[in-house]
Length: 189
Image (cartoon, rainbow, N blue to C red; front, side):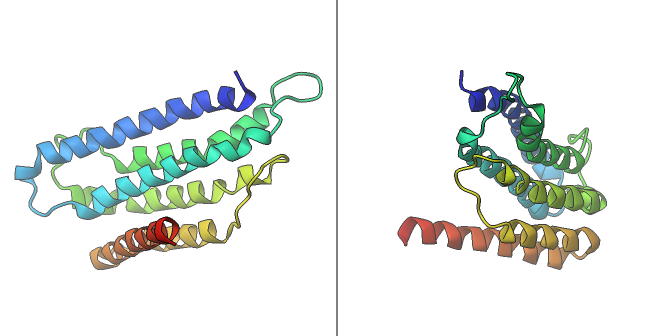
């Protein structure tokens, strides 16, 4: 087993738990759909956004295959493992804040979203900022510019303090639109 593959095991466990939590929340929304007065589109978009950041963080971990995780005396460097695992743990914490504990009894998804959105977006902004930390490790093959993660984190901090449904809907629609444009640009040039 390669050093990076060894480091990916705990990250994969955390990612699997986070994806399971999001999928159970979506299943509960679908299950209670007849009892919901207003479709919880912002709630679903927020959980999908968290899922997107978790996936992108996990997909980008192969850039660290050149990082030497073993210290000079042969001991595994736990600091490197922590630097790589930290963003995934923070994204999982954000998911845990946003997804209600007993979603089958929570039919007011908008009320729950706006109640938990300040802490959710602050934690999500911290998670986006920590994705830049592993790029500072020696041996990283591709270290992107930290500009975009910091712009996204600043947007999340602004959303944490705004309680307007229209502003949140606009921010989410802009995020997904920019993501679609970026995807189209990379696919079709």
